[in-house]
Image 1 (cartoon, rainbow, N blue to C red):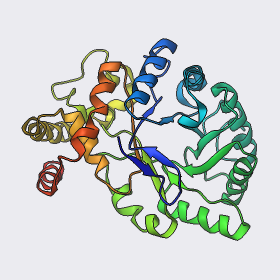
Image 2: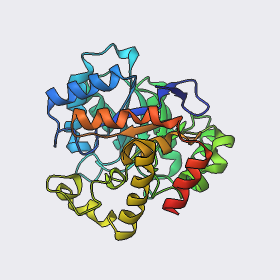
Image 3: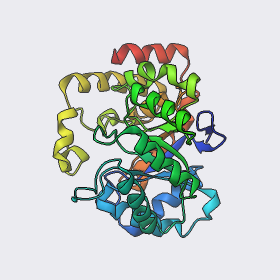
Image 4: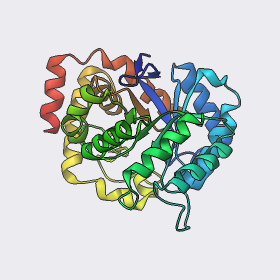
Length: 312
């Protein structure tokens, strides 16, 4: 396992991390969460990702139980604030929800602080200076060490930096965007000017495009799979994506790895990716995905060109 700096920041994250989205609470109970997080940690993972919206807070509670078995300084923990409830002030990036949502998340995690705190989506209804001031308060109060954004546009991130500079506030350090072989342009093109200018790090999610790039949907939707259980995700499955995944599968077989490992390893080759967040519904799947780190160095320029041609 390699450990990468979070952009310009000194914090080091395992190149592969483990996230709670969809699986914690829905497929993994507390015993399974503890086993999976311990397995990931023993394989070198030090970063565990969560959000207040995951399972309506249940994912944070489960992770909090598992974290009791770890030395706090050995792990990097994140959460994200935006969707906290149904009340008029339980959603968005207004000062009230950011601060109260963070306090509630810390209570569920049973932690005094998180290492990384994200604004889970942009909020057009809240002035950016209000959001920046609230995040600055949370950092200075010791409730988080770094703050960042998730799925913000480059223009929105740039504006947050400008406002932070104008107000003398702590600026965002990282972004958490979707990034995979089927969803590339934001990380590779839109954000490109931000890496050097602001030293932005990225902790990317969905390296398998909700499981499509694992190859499991090459011949339909298996019963009990993610797309079978989560109806709104099915819109991402198209004949074109299946065709591209099959082409990647042929490359993976030549390389002696799975399509999933090839797809994750490809994400690791991007120098602007600080950590790739993995999800897994069982230990076998987690073991397979973690082994992608061993495939990364086998992807030479010729193979990368072949992969690019398969998906372009």
